[in-house]
Image (tube, rainbow, N blue to C red; front, side, top):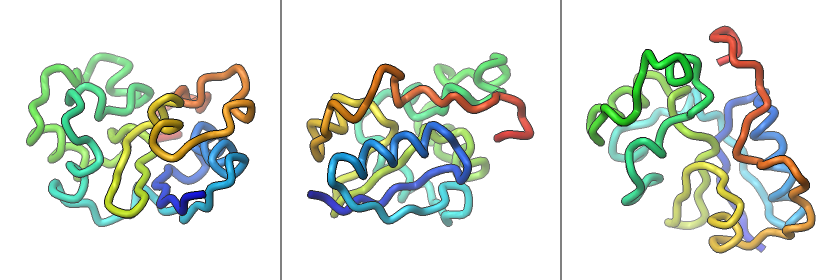
Length: 138
């Protein structure tokens, strides 16, 4: 199986569940802190490829949920500048295997990328973070 670099927000229940799925699927993880990684616009952009900018954003971020930050209004450079300044806006997790990178945890996309034991997933969509959405929790 694969060895995956996995950037998470420490303490995030959604990321914990995603790691459980990857481990149950036989993958090894090297876990890193998304919030303390020294991101640059260039290093972060590699995770998003040609995906629409709106998909780069953490939809559970309080400012996104409240409408204060509207991802659809950002171009690539503006989004990258914001995310480097405040990594909590980045969709989680970020994952890397070799030179291949992926943002977010879409089950089909992750399965096609490195393979998952689909019976380990359960009913709850692992993209959705069950975390409390108070600003203090982010």
